[in-house]
Length: 298
Length: 86
Image (cartoon, rainbow over all chains, first blue to last red; front, side, top):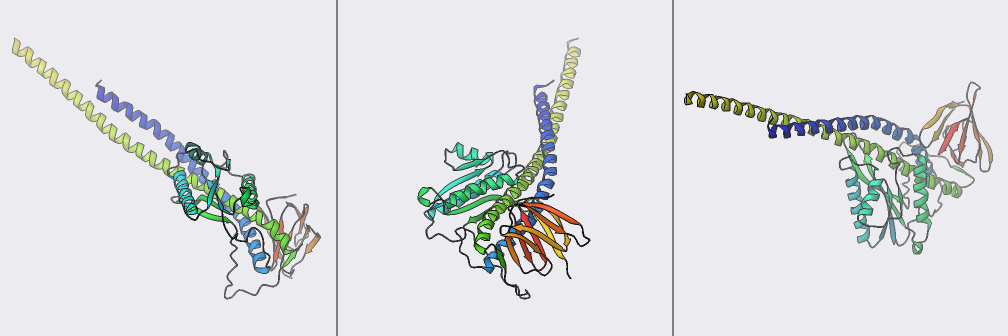
């Protein structure tokens, strides 16, 4: 067998094996998107209820809370970056890291220091490789985040927020994550978590006048226990979105990898056929040439 | 009288929703019973059970720790990061 032919056959075989893997990953990701999306949908009644409660307190009382008051001078900002634990998801991780870099640059240009909270092995790897410092990391459960993770993260950021700036505390907290827009689109987005900007509901034209709210024990206490929960639910929602987006990105990346493998297989099969035909043609012409020489020698 | 629309919601899903004639919960200040037509309210729940009486007389109890109870125009929401039907 010709050397060229053997090389082509090897390449075909390797493309076929790769295709098997990428195809399997594509199918797995596709089935996980459904589940991840269902979790996003299932958690939405909770976040809706919490949001409604927060806006009710905000509209019906005028309590100033430490989490909602804008500090006079912001010295340090924290950025929470949500990435995945595994790669093979196209631009999923790089786009969110790029977004975070842009945000940090903006913050630094405003004279703020930036500290980082990282979720997912990819973010930790990115920071470790560049020998950059970060406050805290959470790895290993970004594929299937549970509420405990959200609680841990929100406890950590709240703790940093409530600490004094001179103590290494932060005055502003951002979350950068991939938002699940559709199966085909995941956009990196930045959300400012703290201080909270409570958007007071814009009164609709036909809205009935809401009667006075009663708070038990009082508005301040309710707000006190409500706001951390609100932060938790925002972080939980971001985690779930990010995991759904990761699966969608994996599926997309693996689909194009499979398509690419298909194309390679076709191309190499053509080349291999070509090489085989060339070999046969050469053999025939050698035989014919040899026979001619024998006849001439007689 | 109109019935209450009750939903019990935890962080990752909606546990139960439906109509009820009365909701009894324990807030940090003590037990509270809510009947249709209750004024809008937002309360912090203490550890303990929430009892929901259905119109047909049946009762449902749910555990909702560190949660909230909100009432607004006959819609009652019991929200807790961890909630389950007992």
